[in-house]
Length: 187
Length: 187
DNA sequence: CAAATATCCTTAGCCTTCTAAGTAAGTCGG
DNA sequence: CCGACTTACTTAGAAGGCTAAGGATATTTG
Image 1 (cartoon, each protein chain N blue to C red):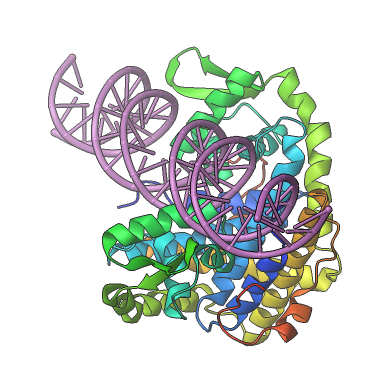
Image 2: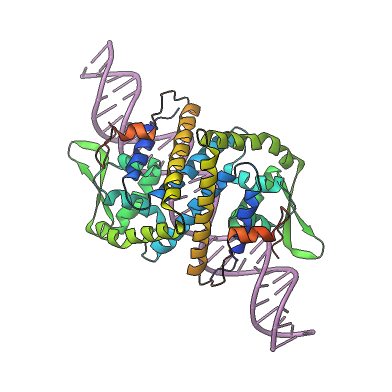
Protein backbone atom coordinates (compact mmCIF):
# COMPACT_ATOMS: atom_id res chain seq x y z
CA UNK A 1 0.00 0.00 0.00
CA UNK A 2 1.69 3.16 -1.17
CA UNK A 3 1.76 5.84 1.46
CA UNK A 4 2.75 8.65 -0.82
CA UNK A 5 0.42 9.94 -3.43
CA UNK A 6 1.46 9.65 -7.01
CA UNK A 7 0.36 13.21 -7.28
CA UNK A 8 3.81 14.10 -6.08
CA UNK A 9 5.31 12.47 -9.13
CA UNK A 10 3.00 14.29 -11.43
CA UNK A 11 3.84 17.58 -9.76
CA UNK A 12 7.45 16.83 -10.23
CA UNK A 13 6.96 16.19 -13.90
CA UNK A 14 5.17 19.43 -14.36
CA UNK A 15 7.88 21.26 -12.50
CA UNK A 16 10.47 19.80 -14.80
CA UNK A 17 8.63 21.03 -17.79
CA UNK A 18 9.22 24.54 -16.54
CA UNK A 19 12.97 24.11 -16.17
CA UNK A 20 14.61 25.06 -19.43
CA UNK A 21 17.69 22.86 -19.51
CA UNK A 22 18.01 19.11 -19.62
CA UNK A 23 14.30 18.45 -19.25
CA UNK A 24 14.42 15.84 -21.94
CA UNK A 25 17.13 13.90 -20.14
CA UNK A 26 15.02 13.72 -17.03
CA UNK A 27 11.96 12.70 -18.92
CA UNK A 28 13.90 9.84 -20.44
CA UNK A 29 15.30 8.87 -17.08
CA UNK A 30 11.83 8.88 -15.54
CA UNK A 31 10.36 6.82 -18.32
CA UNK A 32 13.19 4.37 -17.92
CA UNK A 33 12.67 4.06 -14.21
CA UNK A 34 8.94 3.75 -14.64
CA UNK A 35 9.36 0.92 -17.11
CA UNK A 36 11.89 -0.69 -14.82
CA UNK A 37 9.66 -0.53 -11.79
CA UNK A 38 6.66 -1.87 -13.68
CA UNK A 39 8.58 -4.88 -14.93
CA UNK A 40 10.36 -5.41 -11.63
CA UNK A 41 7.06 -5.59 -9.77
CA UNK A 42 5.84 -8.30 -12.09
CA UNK A 43 9.06 -10.27 -12.16
CA UNK A 44 9.21 -10.22 -8.39
CA UNK A 45 5.94 -12.16 -8.26
CA UNK A 46 7.77 -14.95 -10.06
CA UNK A 47 10.85 -14.67 -7.90
CA UNK A 48 13.01 -13.26 -10.66
CA UNK A 49 15.05 -10.13 -10.15
CA UNK A 50 15.14 -7.35 -12.66
CA UNK A 51 18.88 -7.69 -13.09
CA UNK A 52 18.57 -11.27 -14.22
CA UNK A 53 15.89 -10.51 -16.75
CA UNK A 54 18.39 -8.57 -18.83
CA UNK A 55 20.56 -11.61 -19.27
CA UNK A 56 17.85 -14.21 -19.51
CA UNK A 57 16.20 -12.52 -22.46
CA UNK A 58 19.48 -12.60 -24.34
CA UNK A 59 20.13 -16.21 -23.49
CA UNK A 60 16.65 -17.30 -24.56
CA UNK A 61 17.50 -15.93 -27.94
CA UNK A 62 20.46 -18.26 -28.18
CA UNK A 63 22.71 -19.35 -25.31
CA UNK A 64 26.22 -20.72 -25.16
CA UNK A 65 28.14 -17.53 -25.82
CA UNK A 66 31.17 -16.48 -23.81
CA UNK A 67 30.62 -14.32 -20.79
CA UNK A 68 32.23 -11.40 -22.50
CA UNK A 69 29.95 -11.63 -25.51
CA UNK A 70 27.01 -11.70 -23.13
CA UNK A 71 28.25 -8.48 -21.56
CA UNK A 72 28.42 -6.82 -24.95
CA UNK A 73 24.93 -7.86 -25.86
CA UNK A 74 23.54 -6.71 -22.56
CA UNK A 75 25.43 -3.46 -22.87
CA UNK A 76 26.96 -3.71 -19.42
CA UNK A 77 30.50 -4.06 -18.10
CA UNK A 78 31.98 -7.44 -17.32
CA UNK A 79 31.73 -7.27 -13.54
CA UNK A 80 28.00 -6.74 -13.87
CA UNK A 81 27.66 -9.82 -16.01
CA UNK A 82 29.96 -11.75 -13.77
CA UNK A 83 27.94 -11.23 -10.63
CA UNK A 84 24.61 -11.72 -12.37
CA UNK A 85 25.75 -14.96 -13.98
CA UNK A 86 27.17 -16.18 -10.70
CA UNK A 87 23.88 -15.49 -8.98
CA UNK A 88 21.88 -17.14 -11.74
CA UNK A 89 24.16 -20.13 -11.57
CA UNK A 90 23.39 -20.45 -7.89
CA UNK A 91 19.69 -20.20 -8.68
CA UNK A 92 20.07 -22.96 -11.22
CA UNK A 93 19.14 -20.86 -14.24
CA UNK A 94 22.46 -21.17 -16.05
CA UNK A 95 25.61 -23.24 -16.21
CA UNK A 96 29.12 -21.98 -16.83
CA UNK A 97 31.11 -24.31 -19.03
CA UNK A 98 34.60 -24.33 -20.46
CA UNK A 99 35.66 -25.88 -23.72
CA UNK A 100 38.63 -28.26 -23.66
CA UNK A 101 41.67 -26.44 -24.94
CA UNK A 102 40.43 -23.05 -23.83
CA UNK A 103 40.90 -22.29 -20.19
CA UNK A 104 40.16 -18.63 -20.64
CA UNK A 105 36.64 -18.24 -21.87
CA UNK A 106 33.56 -19.28 -19.93
CA UNK A 107 30.48 -20.14 -21.93
CA UNK A 108 27.06 -19.54 -20.50
CA UNK A 109 24.35 -22.13 -21.06
CA UNK A 110 20.76 -22.13 -19.90
CA UNK A 111 19.55 -25.01 -17.77
CA UNK A 112 16.10 -26.48 -18.42
CA UNK A 113 14.88 -24.35 -15.53
CA UNK A 114 16.36 -21.25 -17.12
CA UNK A 115 14.71 -22.12 -20.39
CA UNK A 116 11.37 -22.73 -18.75
CA UNK A 117 11.20 -19.21 -17.38
CA UNK A 118 10.78 -17.77 -20.83
CA UNK A 119 7.13 -18.62 -21.24
CA UNK A 120 6.28 -17.15 -17.88
CA UNK A 121 8.35 -14.01 -18.06
CA UNK A 122 8.13 -12.78 -21.63
CA UNK A 123 4.40 -12.03 -21.34
CA UNK A 124 5.14 -9.80 -18.38
CA UNK A 125 7.42 -7.62 -20.46
CA UNK A 126 4.85 -7.53 -23.20
CA UNK A 127 2.23 -6.46 -20.72
CA UNK A 128 4.38 -3.63 -19.41
CA UNK A 129 5.10 -2.51 -22.93
CA UNK A 130 1.42 -2.53 -23.78
CA UNK A 131 0.56 -0.49 -20.71
CA UNK A 132 3.32 2.02 -21.35
CA UNK A 133 2.37 2.75 -24.93
CA UNK A 134 -1.36 2.78 -24.38
CA UNK A 135 -2.94 5.66 -26.22
CA UNK A 136 0.08 6.23 -28.42
CA UNK A 137 -0.13 5.75 -32.14
CA UNK A 138 2.18 3.39 -33.95
CA UNK A 139 3.51 6.36 -35.89
CA UNK A 140 4.51 8.12 -32.66
CA UNK A 141 6.29 5.06 -31.36
CA UNK A 142 8.24 4.59 -34.56
CA UNK A 143 9.26 8.23 -34.45
CA UNK A 144 10.31 7.96 -30.84
CA UNK A 145 12.36 4.87 -31.51
CA UNK A 146 14.13 6.60 -34.36
CA UNK A 147 14.83 9.66 -32.25
CA UNK A 148 16.14 7.57 -29.38
CA UNK A 149 18.46 5.65 -31.67
CA UNK A 150 19.80 8.90 -33.06
CA UNK A 151 20.44 10.17 -29.55
CA UNK A 152 22.18 6.98 -28.54
CA UNK A 153 24.38 7.24 -31.61
CA UNK A 154 25.19 10.86 -30.91
CA UNK A 155 26.14 10.09 -27.34
CA UNK A 156 28.23 7.06 -28.24
CA UNK A 157 30.17 9.18 -30.68
CA UNK A 158 30.73 11.85 -28.05
CA UNK A 159 31.82 9.25 -25.54
CA UNK A 160 34.30 7.67 -27.90
CA UNK A 161 35.74 11.05 -28.73
CA UNK A 162 36.08 12.03 -25.08
CA UNK A 163 37.91 8.77 -24.44
CA UNK A 164 40.49 9.79 -27.02
CA UNK A 165 39.32 7.05 -29.26
CA UNK A 166 39.44 8.70 -32.63
CA UNK A 167 38.28 5.80 -34.71
CA UNK A 168 35.20 6.70 -36.61
CA UNK A 169 32.11 5.25 -34.97
CA UNK A 170 29.80 3.80 -37.56
CA UNK A 171 26.13 4.49 -37.26
CA UNK A 172 23.72 1.78 -36.21
CA UNK A 173 22.37 1.57 -39.70
CA UNK A 174 25.78 0.92 -41.22
CA UNK A 175 26.56 -1.85 -38.80
CA UNK A 176 23.19 -3.46 -39.28
CA UNK A 177 24.11 -4.28 -42.84
CA UNK A 178 27.19 -6.16 -41.71
CA UNK A 179 25.35 -8.44 -39.33
CA UNK A 180 23.27 -11.47 -39.94
CA UNK A 181 23.10 -13.96 -37.05
CA UNK A 182 21.48 -13.39 -33.69
CA UNK A 183 24.79 -14.10 -32.00
CA UNK A 184 27.38 -11.71 -33.37
CA UNK A 185 30.80 -13.13 -32.62
CA UNK A 186 32.63 -9.83 -32.34
CA UNK A 187 35.42 -10.53 -34.86
CA UNK B 1 41.53 5.26 -23.08
CA UNK B 2 38.68 2.89 -23.73
CA UNK B 3 39.77 -0.66 -24.27
CA UNK B 4 36.52 -1.91 -25.71
CA UNK B 5 35.26 -0.69 -29.00
CA UNK B 6 31.99 1.14 -29.12
CA UNK B 7 31.22 -1.12 -31.99
CA UNK B 8 30.07 -3.62 -29.42
CA UNK B 9 27.42 -1.21 -28.26
CA UNK B 10 26.23 -0.62 -31.74
CA UNK B 11 26.00 -4.35 -32.37
CA UNK B 12 24.03 -4.70 -29.24
CA UNK B 13 21.58 -2.08 -30.39
CA UNK B 14 21.10 -3.76 -33.67
CA UNK B 15 20.54 -7.06 -31.98
CA UNK B 16 17.88 -5.50 -29.81
CA UNK B 17 16.08 -4.23 -32.82
CA UNK B 18 15.60 -7.82 -33.88
CA UNK B 19 14.04 -8.89 -30.61
CA UNK B 20 10.33 -8.37 -30.84
CA UNK B 21 9.37 -7.59 -27.26
CA UNK B 22 10.37 -4.75 -24.99
CA UNK B 23 12.82 -3.19 -27.45
CA UNK B 24 11.48 0.23 -26.72
CA UNK B 25 12.14 -0.14 -23.02
CA UNK B 26 15.75 -1.01 -23.69
CA UNK B 27 16.18 1.83 -26.10
CA UNK B 28 14.93 4.21 -23.45
CA UNK B 29 17.18 2.67 -20.86
CA UNK B 30 20.19 2.99 -23.13
CA UNK B 31 19.44 6.57 -23.98
CA UNK B 32 19.09 7.30 -20.30
CA UNK B 33 22.39 5.68 -19.48
CA UNK B 34 24.09 7.42 -22.37
CA UNK B 35 22.86 10.79 -21.19
CA UNK B 36 23.87 9.95 -17.66
CA UNK B 37 27.37 8.93 -18.63
CA UNK B 38 27.89 11.99 -20.79
CA UNK B 39 26.89 14.34 -18.00
CA UNK B 40 28.72 12.36 -15.34
CA UNK B 41 31.97 12.59 -17.29
CA UNK B 42 31.66 16.36 -17.43
CA UNK B 43 30.57 16.83 -13.85
CA UNK B 44 33.46 14.70 -12.65
CA UNK B 45 35.89 17.22 -14.11
CA UNK B 46 34.43 19.72 -11.67
CA UNK B 47 34.43 17.30 -8.76
CA UNK B 48 30.67 16.99 -8.67
CA UNK B 49 28.97 13.60 -8.63
CA UNK B 50 26.05 12.79 -10.83
CA UNK B 51 23.88 12.02 -7.84
CA UNK B 52 24.31 15.50 -6.45
CA UNK B 53 23.46 17.20 -9.71
CA UNK B 54 19.89 15.98 -9.45
CA UNK B 55 19.38 17.85 -6.22
CA UNK B 56 21.47 20.90 -6.97
CA UNK B 57 19.49 21.76 -10.07
CA UNK B 58 16.30 21.76 -8.02
CA UNK B 59 17.79 23.86 -5.28
CA UNK B 60 19.16 26.43 -7.72
CA UNK B 61 15.61 26.94 -8.82
CA UNK B 62 14.63 27.88 -5.29
CA UNK B 63 16.05 26.41 -2.08
CA UNK B 64 14.74 26.21 1.45
CA UNK B 65 12.18 23.48 0.98
CA UNK B 66 11.79 20.55 3.36
CA UNK B 67 13.76 17.42 2.66
CA UNK B 68 10.63 15.58 1.78
CA UNK B 69 9.55 18.15 -0.77
CA UNK B 70 13.00 17.88 -2.29
CA UNK B 71 12.52 14.14 -2.62
CA UNK B 72 9.24 14.66 -4.41
CA UNK B 73 10.70 17.12 -6.83
CA UNK B 74 13.66 14.90 -7.55
CA UNK B 75 11.37 11.92 -7.96
CA UNK B 76 13.35 9.72 -5.61
CA UNK B 77 12.60 8.10 -2.27
CA UNK B 78 13.53 9.80 0.98
CA UNK B 79 16.54 7.67 1.85
CA UNK B 80 18.11 8.65 -1.45
CA UNK B 81 17.61 12.32 -0.69
CA UNK B 82 18.76 11.85 2.86
CA UNK B 83 22.12 10.40 1.95
CA UNK B 84 22.71 12.82 -0.91
CA UNK B 85 21.88 15.81 1.26
CA UNK B 86 24.10 14.51 4.04
CA UNK B 87 26.96 14.12 1.59
CA UNK B 88 26.38 17.56 0.12
CA UNK B 89 26.28 19.02 3.60
CA UNK B 90 29.68 17.52 4.28
CA UNK B 91 30.94 18.99 1.01
CA UNK B 92 29.64 22.38 2.06
CA UNK B 93 27.08 22.72 -0.71
CA UNK B 94 24.00 22.84 1.50
CA UNK B 95 22.88 23.46 5.07
CA UNK B 96 20.11 21.66 6.90
CA UNK B 97 18.09 24.01 9.07
CA UNK B 98 15.10 23.67 11.35
CA UNK B 99 12.48 26.28 12.02
CA UNK B 100 11.68 27.10 15.65
CA UNK B 101 8.42 25.44 16.55
CA UNK B 102 8.87 22.61 14.07
CA UNK B 103 11.16 19.87 15.17
CA UNK B 104 10.07 17.56 12.43
CA UNK B 105 10.94 19.05 9.11
CA UNK B 106 14.43 19.82 7.94
CA UNK B 107 14.80 22.60 5.41
CA UNK B 108 17.56 22.49 2.85
CA UNK B 109 19.39 25.67 1.98
CA UNK B 110 22.21 26.24 -0.47
CA UNK B 111 25.45 27.69 0.81
CA UNK B 112 27.26 30.32 -1.26
CA UNK B 113 29.47 27.51 -2.53
CA UNK B 114 26.44 25.52 -3.55
CA UNK B 115 25.03 28.51 -5.33
CA UNK B 116 28.27 29.20 -7.12
CA UNK B 117 28.29 25.80 -8.79
CA UNK B 118 25.32 26.72 -10.92
CA UNK B 119 27.20 28.82 -13.44
CA UNK B 120 29.81 26.15 -13.92
CA UNK B 121 27.53 23.15 -14.08
CA UNK B 122 24.45 24.22 -15.98
CA UNK B 123 26.37 24.73 -19.23
CA UNK B 124 27.58 21.15 -19.01
CA UNK B 125 24.03 19.85 -19.02
CA UNK B 126 23.19 22.13 -21.89
CA UNK B 127 26.16 20.82 -23.81
CA UNK B 128 25.12 17.22 -23.28
CA UNK B 129 21.62 18.01 -24.36
CA UNK B 130 22.86 19.74 -27.48
CA UNK B 131 25.06 16.78 -28.38
CA UNK B 132 22.30 14.29 -27.78
CA UNK B 133 19.71 15.98 -29.94
CA UNK B 134 22.09 16.90 -32.74
CA UNK B 135 20.50 16.23 -36.08
CA UNK B 136 17.01 15.96 -34.66
CA UNK B 137 14.36 18.42 -35.64
CA UNK B 138 12.50 20.44 -33.07
CA UNK B 139 9.32 18.77 -34.20
CA UNK B 140 10.74 15.33 -33.43
CA UNK B 141 11.86 16.39 -29.99
CA UNK B 142 8.49 17.85 -29.12
CA UNK B 143 6.84 14.63 -30.28
CA UNK B 144 9.24 12.53 -28.24
CA UNK B 145 8.66 14.60 -25.14
CA UNK B 146 4.93 14.21 -25.52
CA UNK B 147 5.21 10.47 -26.02
CA UNK B 148 7.49 10.09 -23.02
CA UNK B 149 5.12 12.06 -20.81
CA UNK B 150 2.25 9.87 -21.92
CA UNK B 151 4.25 6.76 -21.10
CA UNK B 152 5.21 8.10 -17.70
CA UNK B 153 1.57 8.84 -16.98
CA UNK B 154 0.49 5.41 -18.12
CA UNK B 155 3.05 3.75 -15.91
CA UNK B 156 2.28 5.88 -12.88
CA UNK B 157 -1.36 4.95 -13.20
CA UNK B 158 -0.47 1.28 -13.45
CA UNK B 159 1.79 1.53 -10.45
CA UNK B 160 -0.82 3.21 -8.33
CA UNK B 161 -3.35 0.59 -9.28
CA UNK B 162 -1.00 -2.27 -8.50
CA UNK B 163 -0.37 -0.74 -5.10
CA UNK B 164 -4.09 -0.95 -4.38
CA UNK B 165 -4.29 2.78 -4.46
CA UNK B 166 -7.56 3.29 -6.23
CA UNK B 167 -7.63 7.03 -6.18
CA UNK B 168 -7.82 8.40 -9.64
CA UNK B 169 -4.45 9.66 -10.80
CA UNK B 170 -4.82 12.95 -12.60
CA UNK B 171 -2.93 13.46 -15.80
CA UNK B 172 0.04 15.77 -15.94
CA UNK B 173 -1.94 18.28 -17.88
CA UNK B 174 -4.68 18.48 -15.28
CA UNK B 175 -2.23 19.05 -12.49
CA UNK B 176 -0.35 21.66 -14.45
CA UNK B 177 -3.37 23.90 -14.30
CA UNK B 178 -3.44 23.71 -10.52
CA UNK B 179 0.14 24.77 -10.08
CA UNK B 180 1.73 28.16 -10.18
CA UNK B 181 4.91 28.57 -8.12
CA UNK B 182 8.18 26.78 -8.74
CA UNK B 183 8.00 25.33 -5.26
CA UNK B 184 4.77 23.42 -4.95
CA UNK B 185 4.04 23.05 -1.26
CA UNK B 186 2.22 19.77 -1.48
CA UNK B 187 -1.04 20.74 0.27
C1' DC C 1 -7.67 16.05 26.35
C1' DA C 2 -5.94 11.54 24.90
C1' DA C 3 -5.51 8.09 21.65
C1' DA C 4 -5.06 6.91 17.01
C1' DT C 5 -3.17 8.24 12.76
C1' DA C 6 -0.24 10.44 9.60
C1' DT C 7 4.05 12.52 8.37
C1' DC C 8 9.01 13.28 8.32
C1' DC C 9 13.47 11.96 9.03
C1' DT C 10 16.70 8.27 9.86
C1' DT C 11 18.83 3.64 9.82
C1' DA C 12 19.89 -0.72 7.84
C1' DG C 13 20.57 -3.48 4.20
C1' DC C 14 19.93 -5.04 -0.56
C1' DC C 15 20.24 -4.61 -5.81
C1' DT C 16 22.32 -3.03 -10.03
C1' DT C 17 25.86 -0.96 -12.00
C1' DC C 18 30.31 1.07 -12.40
C1' DT C 19 35.64 1.80 -12.08
C1' DA C 20 40.05 0.20 -10.88
C1' DA C 21 43.02 -3.20 -10.43
C1' DG C 22 44.55 -8.11 -10.34
C1' DT C 23 45.27 -12.76 -12.32
C1' DA C 24 45.48 -16.13 -15.70
C1' DA C 25 45.68 -17.48 -20.44
C1' DG C 26 46.28 -16.91 -25.28
C1' DT C 27 48.95 -14.50 -29.19
C1' DC C 28 52.56 -12.45 -31.73
C1' DG C 29 56.96 -10.23 -33.21
C1' DG C 30 61.65 -10.98 -32.96
C1' DC D 1 61.26 -19.99 -27.83
C1' DC D 2 60.44 -15.66 -25.13
C1' DG D 3 59.03 -11.46 -23.69
C1' DA D 4 55.37 -8.08 -24.62
C1' DC D 5 50.94 -7.36 -25.57
C1' DT D 6 46.10 -8.45 -25.41
C1' DT D 7 42.08 -10.71 -23.84
C1' DA D 8 38.90 -12.87 -20.40
C1' DC D 9 37.55 -13.48 -16.17
C1' DT D 10 37.70 -12.17 -11.27
C1' DT D 11 37.94 -9.27 -7.05
C1' DA D 12 37.21 -5.12 -4.37
C1' DG D 13 34.97 -1.20 -3.46
C1' DA D 14 31.93 2.72 -4.35
C1' DA D 15 27.74 5.26 -6.21
C1' DG D 16 22.99 5.59 -6.66
C1' DG D 17 18.76 3.85 -5.98
C1' DC D 18 15.27 1.03 -3.50
C1' DT D 19 12.37 -1.32 0.39
C1' DA D 20 11.47 -2.16 5.11
C1' DA D 21 11.32 -0.69 9.41
C1' DG D 22 12.08 2.52 13.45
C1' DG D 23 11.71 6.77 16.18
C1' DA D 24 10.00 11.29 16.81
C1' DT D 25 6.76 14.71 16.08
C1' DA D 26 2.35 16.73 14.31
C1' DT D 27 -2.39 16.31 13.45
C1' DT D 28 -6.86 14.50 13.72
C1' DT D 29 -10.55 12.52 15.96
C1' DG D 30 -13.35 10.25 19.51
